[in-house]
Length: 576
Image (spheres, rainbow, N blue to C red):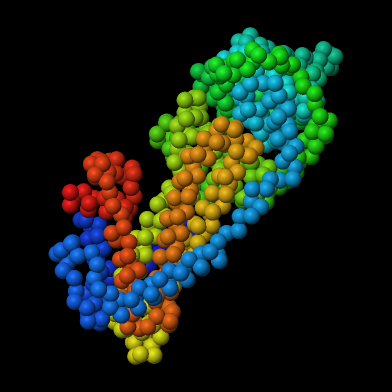
């Protein structure tokens, strides 16, 4: 925790105003064209040391210059530093072997999903959601036209859970007696207001409430208590309900605000449509599915044990700061872009749902891939699901949302400039053996410590991306994400993860190389400043743009490029 805050600390250290030599370690930055200006000294002083005639800077025709012995020594030193940096990254690489292995009891869950889905066409997602709702003790809402297998899914789930199944179709005239049971006449004789609840919702294990948003006010308050607390007030006694999951169904969303609280009680939501044309052919050519399938006794007996084990494991499942930031930013997006209010209760329940997802895969922490479930949690109208999914796809790559690599490059450029100034002052001496002043050596030490902090931050980011990439490869095996959604997400997210990982590892290698350049004594003092300059400037001209890219508008370029890449595009556009 707090790794992300280190960037803020490093931003502050770059603006420190100490006295003595530290106060002179300033960087020049031209805010108009976003170019760094290195202070103190000439650009390539090793040409003078090697007695090589400097090239004509005004001419771009001369591509090669004669390499002197000094230039060759500098290049060899740079190559050695980069090799050491690559070895360091490889040695510290996160071990991901076994990460794709699932929890030993995950097969019970996958078998449960297969049973619920058996004989149904294109109901993979709905089957997963109802089982997830049962495992996490949350309720599921299906919105869609009649005749789309919604009640059959609920019945299948009840057969697995055991216990009574309660099903009722709501109308505007549905009475409390139809849902909670009739009043006991014998109790009324004793002046007691008690219902006979056996066989009704308060004693059911799984409930299916069709057209639930037609519930009237006489039913609503009691129903909310059962859904939220699993409690039913029967006369003067509050009894516990064995309810594991309620599946609500409706052809349409509620229009009355008084039903918003009822809508909020259903954490998982899915818009169920009719099957596709290909699915229809499959249905017509197959034998008619039965309402009930053969239940494996082994699944039913083990299911309660699995639910108990997951509930027990939740306290040990951590949710990292980056995941919390992602949910916070998603709520901001929902509020500002979609105009959707997401209650605190829903977000807390959503976080528990993500922990259930991690626990059911045998992991000890919530990963970004689990957050794909949020697209089934936060929408209020079905059309918003696509917008939420697109936002998640754009922000699920670790470090992408806060442009961590670009911020790191910004900091590293400043530290490289400072270290170059200090090394030129000490004539390459970093130990004091050649007579460097103590204040200058302390300044170099301070820079080295800041580079070590950047290295730790980038190593942590590299580990996160390595883990994220590994989980994306196994995404089609995720228990709670539908097959089609998993393959589409993998196809979109995996290239982004690989690109981000390459950028982070490059920034990490640059950091390690610069750190070694000002801390290792295997580099000769007369080479040190030239090595730092070569490390700093070696990628200045490695980005080129096609004619089509240079014709883009600034708005399009900002969407495609970030940070230093965008600045180089602007400069290339000016030259054009």
